[in-house]
Length: 85
Image 1 (cartoon, rainbow, N blue to C red):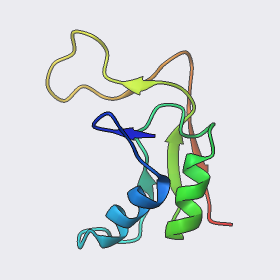
Image 2 (cartoon, helix red, strand yellow; image 1 turned 60 degrees about the horizontal axis):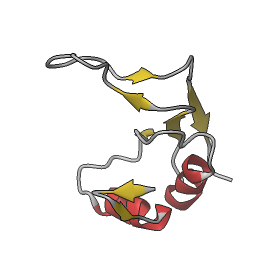
Image 3 (tube, rainbow, N blue to C red; image 1 turned 90 degrees about the vertical axis):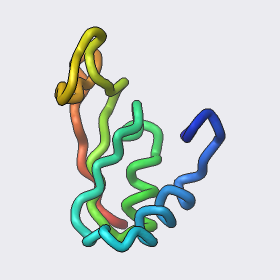
Image 4 (spheres, helix red, strand yellow; image 1 turned 120 degrees about the vertical axis):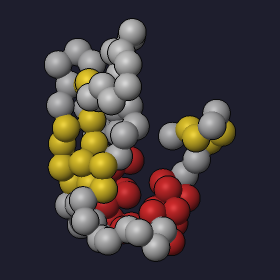
């Protein structure tokens, strides 16, 4: 996983979430391409103890979209949910 072009470990993402005073322990929406298929979502769920929702393919807003366009998962992808193990 990359953040601002730099390699980032799942533990770093979990630390940022857990240290956020506004995080309330509810479902984490992981908006990271393919994160439902590469182990990242399950690892984040395990570390945080929370349910994680993640996409199975590329995710983003369609080209030419404006304002509050909804996110779209490419190539008939879907969201999957991961519970802590």
